[in-house]
Image (cartoon, rainbow, N blue to C red):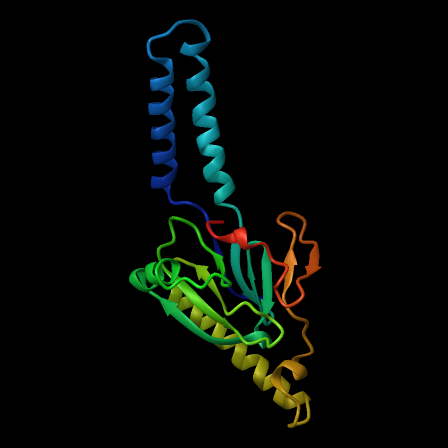
Length: 199
């Protein structure tokens, strides 16, 4: 059962804007010419523009069964520390002047707010995940709720001297295939592609 799920679909304004820019580009390429120049730009550019928006709209953010899933990766909440919701200005700073090169950033251009998820795995050199979202408060609440649930479950089933991470019995973060859900051990997230920003 999922505590939180958000699909990263672009808002209607982005679809309209992409189509408008494509038509402007087609008109510029046409330039009053005859033959293929009068047809091909109008046939191809809008399709390419809308396909680009559709591809960027794929993926979702999900919190379920003690795991945070984002496009291309996942991390058990046993390896998550502090969770901080960020408004527009804070997100702008973290993505810009205060950006950490080793951070794992998953967002979209139409998501100006985010949640900063601290990575508490000592074998992972990723300091935090920055996850774009329309509702930082709701995502934060879901993550904290799942963390508390995992702690309570571990306290009931494991000896007191065992750590939360050890008690949970989870593995470190894994990458997921974009389409078929195949999982690949991420070795503490270090093998994750750094080009995730802007996904």
